[in-house]
Image 1 (cartoon, rainbow, N blue to C red):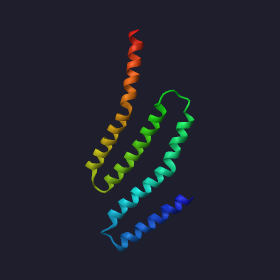
Image 2 (image 1 turned 90 degrees about the vertical axis):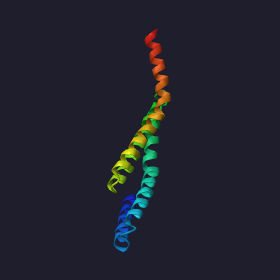
Image 3 (image 1 turned 90 degrees about the horizontal axis):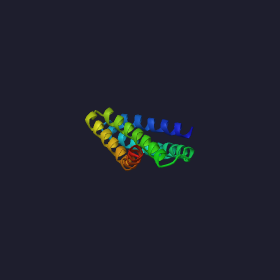
Image 4 (image 1 turned 120 degrees about the vertical axis):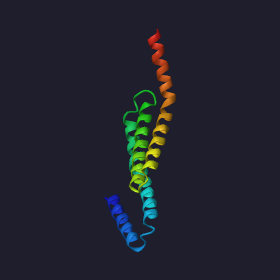
Length: 125
């Protein structure tokens, strides 16, 4: 409930800024968006991810952590790209999504290499 109140306050502040200083609105909107995104990410998404990791903690290997981390990074990428796209910079949004997908694949490469080596040794035996 407190978060809903905070969202309403942020909305009212943005309306006041749009009325008082329309030239500063895009800059302040972007700053408030990223501050609010950081707040929501740290207060809700990270604890949710840790709960999921603890729930599936009995599974072997780091795959649950990688899946949850990849999902959180992908959600973060989508939110940032959507914000950038709304401001009229669609090509930069696409590049930011591509960069995040490369980061996610980079996290998986060492573990995929080990898994492929294990599978190939099982197949050749």
